[in-house]
Image (cartoon, rainbow, N blue to C red; front, side, top):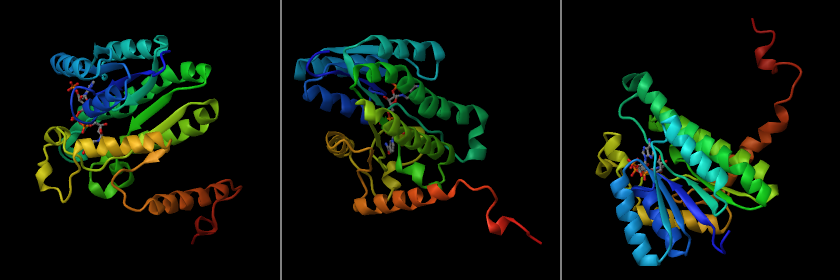
Amino acid sequence: MAAQPAVLITGASTGIGAVYADRFAKRGHDLVLVARDRARLEELAKRLRADYRVKVDIVRADLTNRDDLAQVEARLRDDASIGVLVNNAGSTAAGTFVEQGVENVARVIDLNATALARLAAAVAPRFVREGRGSIVNIGSVVGLAPEFGMTVYGATKAFVQFLSQGLHLELGPKGVYVQAVLPSATRTEIWDHAGRDVNSLAAVMEVGDLVDAALVGYDRRETITIPPLPDAAQWAAYDSARAAMVPNFLQALPAGRYRNVK
Ligand SMILES: NC(=O)c1ccc[n+]([C@@H]2O[C@H](COP(=O)([O-])OP(=O)(O)OC[C@H]3O[C@@H](n4cnc5c(N)ncnc54)[C@H](OP(=O)(O)O)[C@@H]3O)[C@@H](O)[C@H]2O)c1
């Protein structure tokens, strides 16, 4: 591996992924950019090669298609120059759970959860063997807030957060860094796909600000990075409340409130 590992970024053709590509290229990393829109990937790659003199490869893949996904898994497994995976590709569906229907619900899960976990699973054994590497998973604050009404999308993002925390515990001691980034509303095309006017929201973060903050968390080796959260102590208190329950989960009998109920 070169001094700077190459970075494979999914969903790199626009939005958050394209800005990650710009920032890692600026830091001198070679890139592998993955998305469906080849023309956009080529245009971005051309600019990054010219601006930063890094090597940029393109992989056109629909990560909801198993053959395409297998190609990206193989690249992550076999290409020892790749030392960072940014699992960024994600989408949502317009409407409520009832309106979305089975196919849209499955599509969101396929991309946001299944593809993300498969790509992490493809690369993790190599990173562990090498005793180094980073996996950055893009979640969302929606995964902490069922109140937002984006139920399946939020459920996939809760999955991303849990997966990242679990991987941190398993892979961290083996030298592999795992980060979950939880953005809130950020100005990208995802809102058009969701059928929502981003300008109707109370606050929207610019995508450059979001990625730059996420990279501060990356450089600090945070496990959970929530760029919009003003008071980090709130996350710490939430996580402590969760951790305090854990020793109480192992019980021989159901809790008193569920026994001898008349
Ligand atoms: N923007 C927000 O408010 C916000 C907030 C919290 C979390 N996030 C998360 O941030 C990540 C990036 O979102 P974004 O806002 O940058 O969205 P975006 O502007 O819509 O970009 C999504 C990226 O994913 C790619 N993509 C979509 N479907 C794909 C598929 N089936 N296979 C491969 N690539 C696919 C798209 O490229 P192609 O169309 O070329 O495939 C694009 O590059 C997502 O995981 C999203 O859930 C966003």
